[in-house]
Length: 165
Image (cartoon, rainbow, N blue to C red):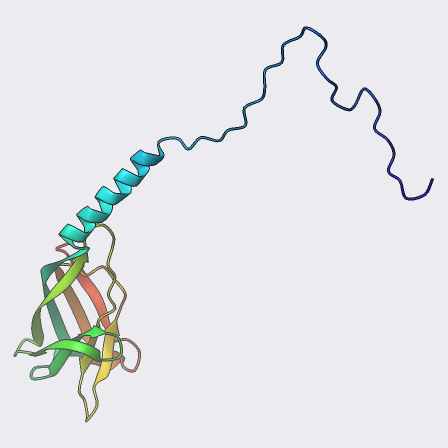
């Protein structure tokens, strides 16, 4: 015969139970364990996050020491921007006679996760602002940068101190 599947052997197919034997039906019910408790936990976490906010404000102090080939550079206007490429909001400072500029600003920290920022330090050697330094980091309370202008055009600043370490 063409096109017909072979018949199953008698001992391979399930058979009816023998007379007088009790058969317990199989239970394939899938239960979700502790489902209401998961929902309650998620709702409490969401309400807590919404009530407390995801971030909080922290004052930050940024100290920049500016030099050129080892000599301090006073009277240079610097801006510490909130975004790379000398864009976004900024705070401005001028280096003192020791070549040091101090910036005070407010940063946002995450309550439940790390909130990264990518600030930039810029100067105005001509008519446009040029970037001296940028990084991606969780904003520290204190940040100290050493900048050597003779290292230009590559990145001229390096982090010296973070949170007093």
